[in-house]
Length: 343
Image (tube, rainbow, N blue to C red; front, top):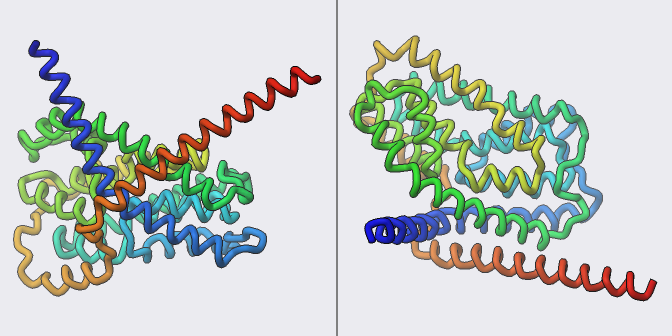
């Protein structure tokens, strides 16, 4: 009886978490789909979004200046790749728009102070160039998204794999979040890299909310290196984004997207060793009101009232694309059977 109740609570928790994640992602995926439609309107000629020999630097700058949530990064990169962008600039843009934005940098200065803001910028930019160089090793190799694919096909696949990622993320969150965050919150001063890394994998927040969470944890005693690890790994390692990259852009792009973790983790450990003992958290926000208000102006926010509408639209688009795919496969099989009969 107790096991049945526990299973019911877990299922209810997963459904609740799925709803929360759909409310979070619906708006941002919709923005990315609207931007993708503009790409297809403006670029009806042969796809050529490569940005020349300075493409890597241009991609990083474009990703950093993008005033959107990090959850628009993967859908926008998919549309750019569908219009011919090479893997190196695409990987750099993907990581840059996932980790950095003008509003996030100002919020980091207000909430985290100069030291952690400098570390945030340095680690974030180094991750962008590592991802870009890793992607550039494949040269002009084509990604999974075909330039000839229609806008509706790409949008349908984006919605489908985003919803699948949401379901997986909800399961991981319900199963592991209480244990991971209990380990982290029991004694933040003694938290190591592994508990912080595990905790970062079990929650999804936009970068501004991630910065506020990191500031509150560092004020409770979490070290500077562990705070940066929580912030940067949490922005990169969410299941919906990783699944979208893997299924639409291929394993090489996923490798380039996740490779910066091999650089971020030792950088954060060095930061912890160098400044952990002498680090003073930012306890007061006095004098930073102007920075926070400017950061809010430079950031696109989710309209709270319309979040359920976009969540429903995202789910409906995913279901419609799934049904369309199943029907197309059934028609293909029936045509194949007819062909063999009349052969």
